[in-house]
Length: 262
Image (cartoon, rainbow, N blue to C red; front, side, top):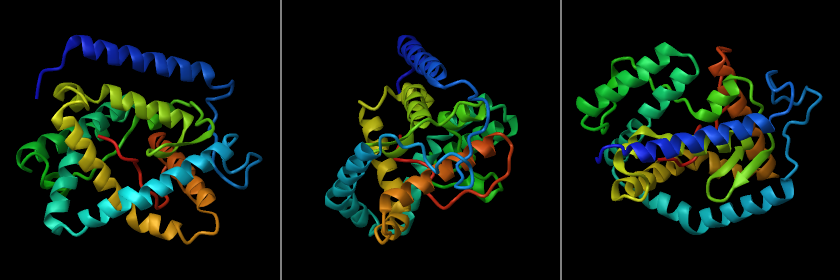
């Protein structure tokens, strides 16, 4: 890995700061109040003013999945289990520094320490993360992202948004995802997504995510309205993650926690 270039780090930090500032300015008054996703509230289950466009984007994503991502994933699923587990563990290990930073930003020191210890353990004893030794000794993964961090401090999710290829988001979490990508410590140290390492990491991460999501996506295809089911599942899952970041215990709905990310 090449050393992090100070200029690149400053640019990433500046872009991240601008995005957070814009989001804070966009968030309407009263954003500090929790905005639950619940059909029993006066608000609808989803703030979805862009539904017509979102449905078209989801249709595009579904077509791309049928033509490309699904078949490639099913080939990947034929690989030996040990190979898939090793690759998945390795790419997830590379997210630990980002999870550590977000846990610190959320004020969760113990969670940050666990993520840092997992990265140190799996990167060494676990042979660059190919084996999740840390979990075997009781250090479970502690995912944390910047969208969750923003929600932890009261920023509302904003409208539901389906992005090409990347899938379901809301405005807050789309901004959080971009900030996470720009400020990812491993990516900055390795020279970004334009390097061989960055591209390989992204490809394996996408395969790992799609493989994990395969049963849920297969079940989704049988729904009367897959768009509504995916929207509801995603928003409930993100709402639960924000509650978790605030220290409010809540079981997470069964929905993939991340879209493909390096």
